[in-house]
Amino acid sequence: MRISAAQRTENENRIRAAMDRLLRGEIPPGGKCDIKTLASEAAVDRTAFYGSRPYAHLRLEFERRVQALRDAGEIPDPREAQIARLKAEVAKLKERLAQSEQTIDELTDFRSQVLARLTAQHEEIVHLRETAAGTGRVTRLPAARSATFGSCS
Image (cartoon, rainbow, N blue to C red):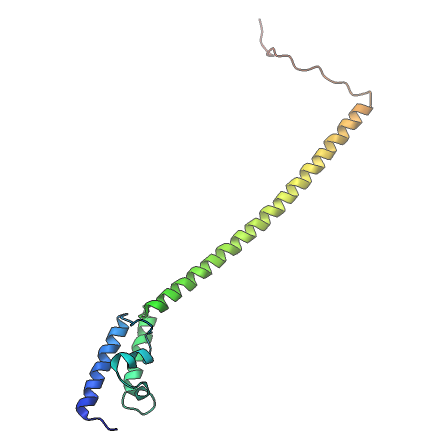
């Protein structure tokens, strides 16, 4: 079915208005910033945006404007912005988790080394005590007196 020039102009105006709304972030519930939602919002058949159909140039304009916003660091679709933010947060959390795991591994190794050293030192002390107790050449010093040393009367 052919449409008149006036109907075509009216459709193009509705498409452009819907395009502006979507690019401002006014996404309807369940929609996205895409051609399907654009067609739905403008009440135009989606197939009219493809091939040599009458509104293919508007699809190209819409895609160009969406890409320009993305290149500028803006994401018109709030859901896409939330997804991008959450992906960045997940990446940061994965990095923190990897650092935490590395720190835990390092501390576990350090703890093992410290326990091994303490055990070796304890065994050495026990051995030295046994050796000292078994020989008569070691003289025990008297316990220190409570009086202070170095005082002259």
